[in-house]
Length: 95
Image (cartoon, rainbow, N blue to C red; front, side, top):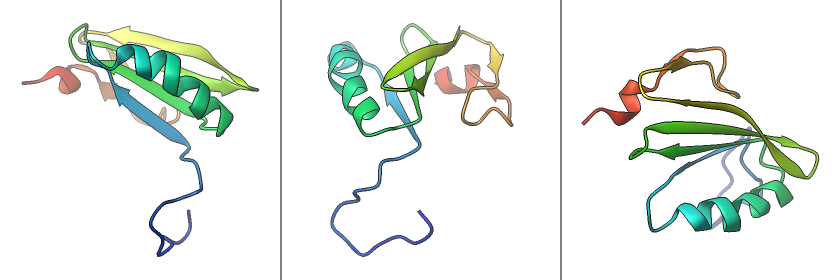
């Protein structure tokens, strides 16, 4: 988005979405939102589970998502679409 429009809501879908899962929202995030993100052509979705300390990275392939990375704990990863940098997952779980 080269310029931020002066509107109440954006119509341009993001390239990347991260959902932080919780017991009360995990089903909605996986079953309800993923198909909507695919329909809107969101290129990558991260599902982050702070209790299980896991990261799942999905990439849009046509009309569906493909799981391209699962990692957790203290792993250091390069996760699309930010794979130019390393991400220490332990920093996500720090209290």
